[in-house]
Length: 356
Image (cartoon, rainbow, N blue to C red; front, side):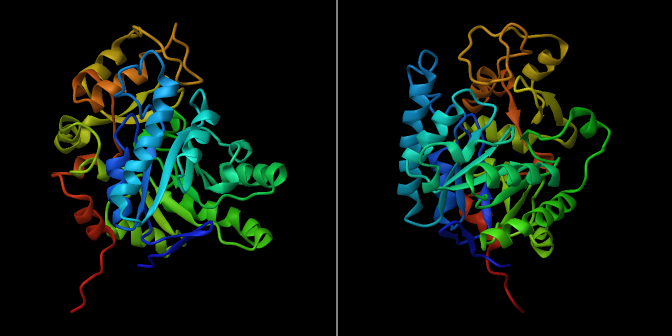
């Protein structure tokens, strides 16, 4: 397994990006542990300040303060290894503010999905960090590459290609997912690799591609790297680690999940998502659960008609009240049977193989 990947002016020691998971599932503790192993730890910018006393009254200030605190925590844990990223959803209100807060916190990378981050390079200070979009097709990569080149004279520092088996918000239409009209991750990766070639030539640099969505074993990683991927982004497997920032009950919900418990759900973000079924999500399927309050977090969400409050549901879950919450997870979450340390997981995924 090739390990080192050039990311902008920096080097990623191991080809593993720990995917950003909000609300509060991937904060400084998890990100720092992944960095300490030589990978890229990623803090989610989706309400990292949810534990602060004033959060529901002033979420923006709380979130921006928490990004600073969690980034510092990750750096302290990392022992100077690895790279630190923040994942910011395009669908977020105050998107640019959170990107700027992450840059000010001194992160190495901004990863951005849940929409097309067409204007990401326009954010003040973005030239100081590596920028990476999450795309789900060659077409999306082509549109973004063309736009960044034309408007900002910049190409992505790497691209995450997310397939249909991912957890959380998905870049596919619900009917495509239900009817199986989606291509394999390997096909999507190859599509994107073809799209980046002219930009690598024009900018005289490589644009690494990381496959994501349903990646579970070392063999999965090797197979993607064999077709040209530089590495992978994995999220769900990092939930079942001792260092994951979520409540133990959240981790147990993942471990106890059966294959049939993992399902597609409607999200107020206007995108389909994948999650472990809970009592709350069962109720949401039967009828609208009107939000008790609104903090204006998602651009597509209309409080008067939203099926439920996604912030409330995600906060309940990460705090351990899982049956009254939303537990995002990838399609292979049912395969996880126990909690391990980040060190053990990283060794399993990319440790030195013993030779006979």
